[in-house]
Image (cartoon, rainbow, N blue to C red; front, side, top):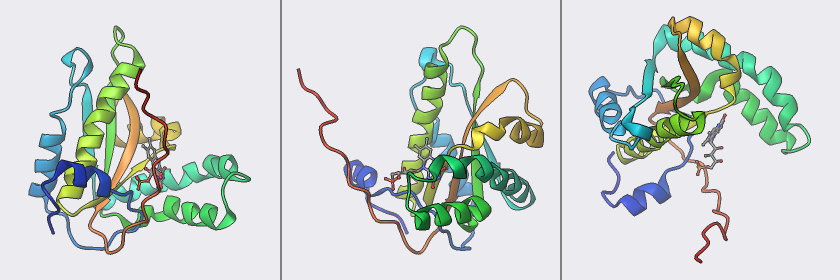
Length: 190
Ligand SMILES: Cc1cc2nc3c(=O)[nH]c(=O)nc-3n(C[C@H](O)[C@H](O)[C@H](O)COP(=O)(O)O)c2cc1C
């Protein structure tokens, strides 16, 4: 299924998806999305983004690490979220909603660049990725908080000298989450 060509509609209808079906994601489609996502702006045009696509065995390895990160995420949510939401979040940390693909995003460590600029550039490419995936009928969910397991993730991929930023779960899905309403008053015209 391919969604609208209207960029306004694509942006507003993208949702974080936390439950995936087992329909295979074609490699050609994923490659097209990744090759297009990198047409993002980047500080000093460093193009400092790296994406690692995990499937099958490597994905299982990552899920083990992700699951461990729940230990320190859980206490940070207690008292702030309803217990049902905490339970569902814990489940997601255990299986990533059966996503068939997880993409791990990294940045070069650039001594002469402020971290906020280099990381920001990668997140701009990530947003492109999320929107392109949505246009192609694929669901995505950014996986935060696992950056605290960065050393284990880097060891798993045999990566040094790059900063691990986040994961992105990706796959086809049957049902989307409701749209959380956007907060008002975030634009100020002077
Ligand atoms: C940096 C970042 C980290 C996120 N981490 C998680 C996460 O660990 N688990 C999760 O289920 N959703 C995560 N999300 C998704 C947000 O919860 C979601 O974007 C937000 O609730 C708004 O919903 P929407 O994406 O459907 O509009 C993350 C989003 C961002 C941008």
